Length: 96
Image 1 (tube, one colour):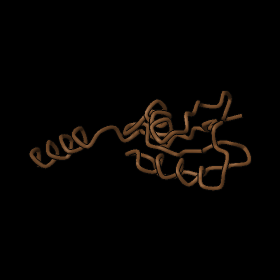
Image 2: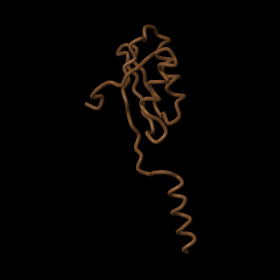
Image 3: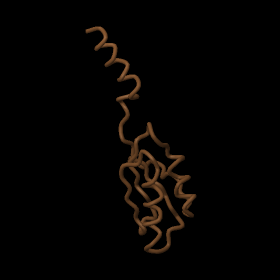
């Protein structure tokens, strides 16, 4: 029984923290100017490990990204859009 308990504890520690929750960030992507731009931005963001959902609005020039903060960061997301030719910045007070 002690070996089983030790194995469970070890597996839990190796698997990583269980308290991570999905995070959402809104990115301002000012250089989007045509109907193809949101597709490129969405593709770039979707390829970042840990991203689970992306929606992009050409009208608002924004991308909303849901991601696992144990696998990626906002900095990695903005780097992905910049590398695709569309520099972005997090929107202040996105949660309000």
